[in-house]
Image (cartoon, rainbow, N blue to C red; front, side, top):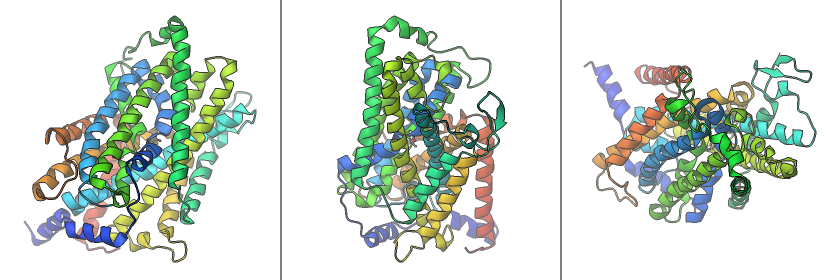
Length: 491
Ligand code: ALA
């Protein structure tokens, strides 16, 4: 091995010392104010969003039919395996950089770089996806009041949309999605953050709307079961001959779509430094958020696919479309759902953009990104340049890219990050066996190994186009690492 290669390898495998993590935690001097319920609320605030309010419709209509219920259970099982791994790491490492810091401590410099670039898909790109979901519900809400938003200004550039009179024209941009992403980024530059109280209010609103959907839909179905059960025949539509178009491959494909709906359970990990009792409460926040969302999602999927024929659900506002089936006297409830979705999705976009800026901040602090990403505005106290750049990227993506492609890319990136986090649990047990752990994954090493296998299997069911794009993205990320390390390009 040449000297250059061995020094590159040494750099790639260099792990961040635990002492440095503890020193940063002490320096951050954040007040430990968050109890277990607040942590749970942070988790649910980030979890319930475009996944359940929007992507469920496409997953049922195009991939799984009513069997999307099973897809939700599969996706939640994959997230639960990973949730145990996050719970162990969050209760062990007092860090706010989440998976990026775990990878740096347990696996080394190169793994941290890869995870950092995966988190761009998990947070930055996801923010764009949710902004597009927000746009769909806003346009639909305005429509409910008789205001027609021009369709060519509410779809990704170049997509053909039907305008008044029925003609198909290419869309210009998704203006509402851009507006929400840009406005929330500007608020974050100014230092406006959602307070715990506002977060709790929005969580109660969106969970309330979802519980009402389950209750009102459930009562209607129980009152007249035969009328609705027809929508479950067949429950698992036969595969059309294409992988992922119904049948069991469709159920798996839909699971890779709806896994998006669970993302955010691990966002609790970014509040690691502010938890009063991280060892006990972080696992509660991470796993509790998953349990609550799994129950709500499975019931929503059951009610949704019973109320409306699955083929009718490939729309921007599937829950409201299903409520329309109950009759005109429920129109107020469809409006309430849209309102809940608009508020709920706004807070998810805000949290995702915020998380992305903090991950870039941690990466810049550790020398992975230009220092400018860690520069804090003297008066506003926010990483303003970082936030403006994240805001620009998110706004551009939200205005121009396809919702489902971006959503799938988010799922693939996140599932890969999940596999790395599970591997980090195994590695940290080896390299730091005596580290005090507030929580340990059950059935070690089966749970982390299962998480790795399940995340990768689900990731592979996303389909060749997105996987090829993802492989290209990773190749560029690896190339940048090697060029910077090999030629000592300092940034
Ligand atoms: N789970 C979040 C959502 O569905 C990202 O919007």
